[in-house]
Length: 105
Image 1 (cartoon, helix red, strand yellow):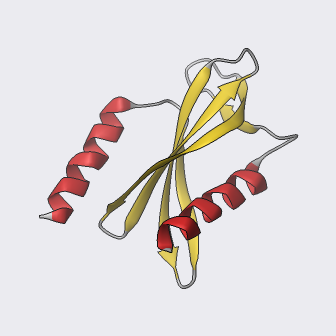
Image 2: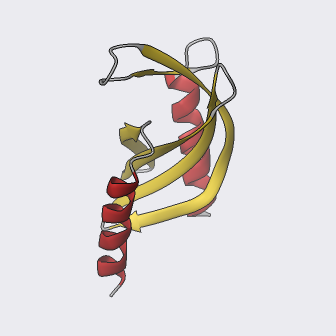
Image 3: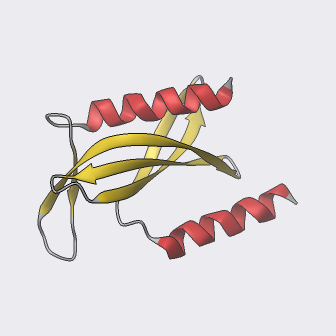
């Protein structure tokens, strides 16, 4: 199924972008690099126009939960991940959900 393909593509993207098992996030507010480790993928996948929005739970080195959002588009027979949001930006998430609702009407 397409959902299974998207989940597999997200996992492959995470694996390719990981350094010693962690995704590295440069925090623009502090200028520090934060290591986050995969915990679990969410079943939540939304389609917004031709784009996909996927979520996964990560943990930092202290064990704090961080939701990471991935944005992807299908190109031919593969998915290209175009943006990764480490901030848990609820405002951005609500905007994406709003567009998903508009696209479904």
